[in-house]
Length: 258
Image (cartoon, rainbow, N blue to C red; front, side, top):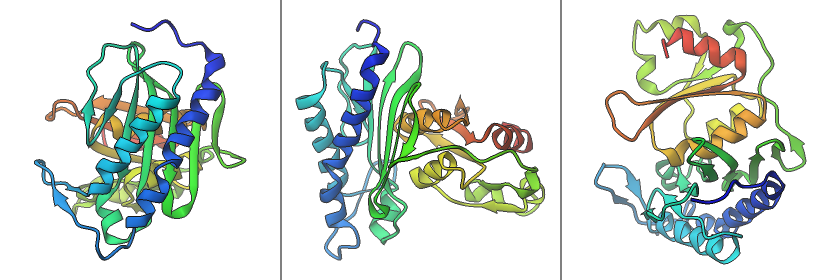
């Protein structure tokens, strides 16, 4: 196992993560709204493209060349290196592949460095390629988008909160709809970024993989927010989560009995 990572390295590692994601941005955008982009189906029925795999390989190659220690990588498309280590990189090369293939600008790339012993991410980056926005954070360094320091939404009455839930939570008669007049259905890393910048008060998502939430975890917490994560009861290796301002996350958790 690795020695404890000194805090003084976190700014360097955050910059490394930003550059690793930036290195595949041109590749990804070349396929955005391209009529020649072909889609495939994975075994679980979700959509994937060649760019998902190529982008992940590009990030792995960049990290392999530039990182200060040979930490392993867990990625959505290429799996787990399997090398024993306290620290690892976690990457989702195109989070929101379906929106990406339909020409919606809400997709992005997620990259995090996590401490598996402490079970928390130390560095996180979300790049919303089509919007040209990069969200970054490291423990103790705050969360940033460009030169703007991110801060989650201020405390406000729950009836004034903008909250995002998956579509199935909008079912007729669901009490969440009555308790949350400004309920919306945003998804993927775009919604996570909007929580970090205070545009959304809170969101809940279900059955996520570690690569879906590792980067968002540190970004939202460094923006002053709350992250609640639990194992999905009926799906091994998946997680349910609530992200939000402290007040918004607590209110949403109570409403949906999280």
